[in-house]
Image (cartoon, rainbow, N blue to C red; front, side, top):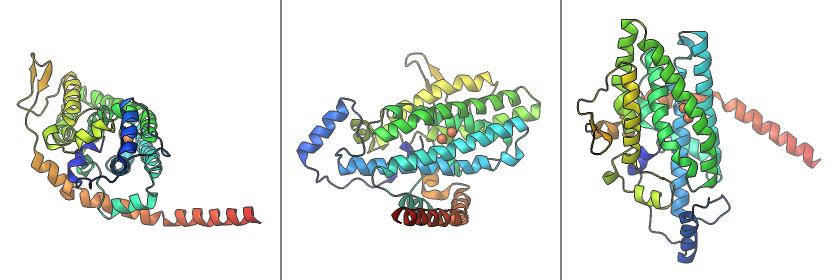
Length: 328
Ligand SMILES: [Fe+2]
Ligand SMILES: [Fe+2]
């Protein structure tokens, strides 16, 4: 996840100067479903698209730790605290696998972190919404990680080997994240009236942002076709969005809750749910960094980076000493 939504925001690629016979051989390999590995030749635009997509994905994982980390000290029981701690740590791990995958394409960790902190790089808009109640933590696991799974399962077959392999483990962990979120909401949905109201309120606030995580509609997503041809993406934004809605609506109903979409209706002929129009103005505003908590998120990230400076310095000093010893 965390990436398709942002593709329209980036400028179009410059015209290619890659030798045609190399491009042809590359495209034939991709079309035959072979993985492209770090040392293989690849078109410059493919490399740049992947660095952008994988680093945005990595940024989203670590920024995504913030809204949930906010609730670790307030989890309602020891069990829920242990689950939430494990989940937030998993997200940190996802960020690390993904930064490492992007590094194999020639982008350094410092460059990527700097792009995030200076506002040059984007991350998923979903993490610019606040977590107001405990039900939000359930809703994030269920809806946000659920949408992530929809996006990431096809990425296990993405054409770039290191990215595809990182996704295998990420998807297993995301599946635990989704279940723990839904499980927390089942408990609340069977609880007091106040708890039930909290669940409905969380669904009302998270439903549309979660649906928007799949990005602009296909006719408004100019880089999509190229990404599909290169098998970076395997399904379009609208296909994934429809799959998510079809899978999630029955889960809302099972909780005894309502979907906050007056136009939602099962379409017998299509075999899918029809759904209402998305608020693209809100979407692009959040992408531009105007989301309710965007400033707070970046401040928290920069502070974490500054506070961790001594760890990086200590690691550098240790490495310098190790090399000196090895040379002696
Ligand atoms: Fe994750
Ligand atoms: Fe997750």
